[in-house]
Image (tube, rainbow, N blue to C red; front, side):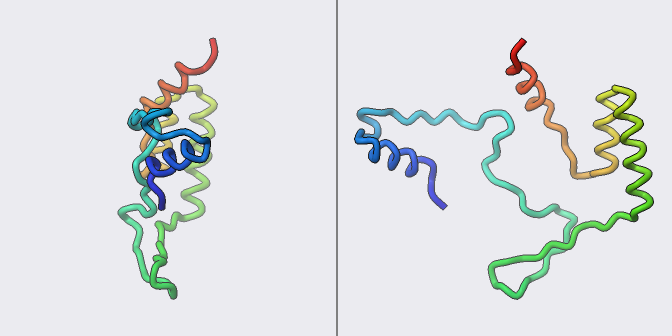
Length: 114
């Protein structure tokens, strides 16, 4: 891994400038939807060692196919209704780990051209 600060400074130097003198680096923080780190496993997944010492295997939750089909049919009906709040609730039932990001949706909507 490389720090973003180091990458920015290297790009400035490659361009023939001096970091902090010719070009200032501004730390702006996270934008809506950005993450500092990525979760690779869910809390309910069982982890086990693989044949490689640095790799783990995750065993996820298995859903019955008929239950999944009924849930997807229900989701399609809900989508057709146009009730977005209800769609989110159905999605949360089908995928318990699903967490809607309201602030990202609002930010994306406000950035669309009128």
